Image (cartoon, rainbow, N blue to C red; front, side):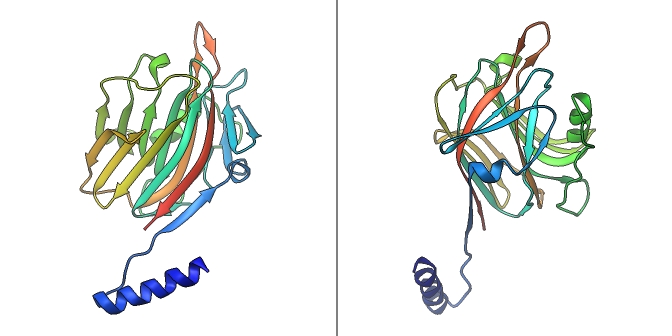
Length: 229
């Protein structure tokens, strides 16, 4: 019924306005679907009711999952996230792809670890948002990676604004040449990009502390929705 109503409404608007109306496609990603994404480095995925728990395990140097699909053009990413350990840096790569015109992504070899994953990331075109990174001695940052040697922009926030054990609403938007990153409806980053990336995959990553003191990263994610225009 919803599809029929939407179709009739679109035809009505086309008749009134005399031009096609852009439609939005929403992808609701369930925890079960997230478990099927490709994983990089050592870690564990667990489903608890409507949540996906993503965590490092001993020997991890960060743990990532990569969407099987690539997404093109304008995009809005919404989800809720909760850090479950004192060292749970949360990292999102979006419109991540191999360098060039393709929106495809070549994953590192199976068993790649640590610096191999880092080197692979630097060779991708992508937008990178890292937040809840107090444990790494940083505030949130946002950059556009063009190549291992070139950033399109690089922003830092003035402060961290997340606490362990609390849920936060995350929103990431690319609308034409405007990029936004929000936490609980507060704009953390706003950036114009005159040459936005055309598309690519979504990567969700957690990273803990793996030095003198070892604290494994652990976070819960739910209600992931990807909206395309």
